[in-house]
Length: 247
Length: 135
Image: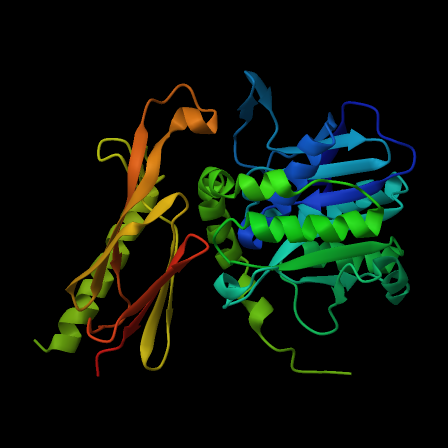
């Protein structure tokens, strides 16, 4: 099934790199954060993720047809951004395909950015960032950038990717930031980027992201709507349930 | 026919029309209503044991220009003007000429509610409404 989704390289992929995933999810935190990294670091498009199973669509940017899921690179950083909702049925092949490609390219660390819905999001000034790790040894790397998530469910591509990375010993961190569930949340994306800056020693400025907050929320409204439908199909609400077993 | 039974039938009809709407997605399904110059906002509803909790995403909204109406015990209407006109061009889209100056939503409540005791607040551009459930 993973073969049905393919990462197609079109440019130069660095020999050693950190892979950042920005897939549409809770509050579109990953999509907004990853898009901001791409524009801030003026990253170059180096590939795309393709599949005959994806909805028959392209996206036009500056008059040029593009794949909605693309790869960008700059220095030792590669970012995957999906600017359309991922159909729930394709979550597993997409996750497998990205991890397989990352492993084949000897990715040093994979960092996925997502949201974690909280009911009182309106009252939170600075959203807190949590991290799920593929291996306990990554705690040192995390430092004080995020709090380690010890118990809970992760539903969707990021959960599957994290488990697969753990199995093949590819270091992976999933950053989950407190956010609105079905409203685009640029403030949460900014908090996630501050954590990412600390982990990778980057200097991605988030002031601009915060200033353009309202514009981003409106622009991302339609993708959020589609993403919400897919989250419902994959049972995303189980993330707010308590695992029955512990220890 | 009892009130409960009628409610059930209306729910079924509502569900049916939503399903039909989704089958015939067209330019209006996106919620950008160019003719009315209004945007249908994103919203979410949670039903608690004693109240219904509704939130509505309203970026660019003028906090002084938000009105909430309860025309029936199972319906809530929200109208809100934006601080300025928003055009597709603002969002980089040049092939569509619409401009928008308000949000408008008519939301079906999953359970009957009462207007008295309703509270609302607008923070971070998100409108939060708490409505007591009808007993």
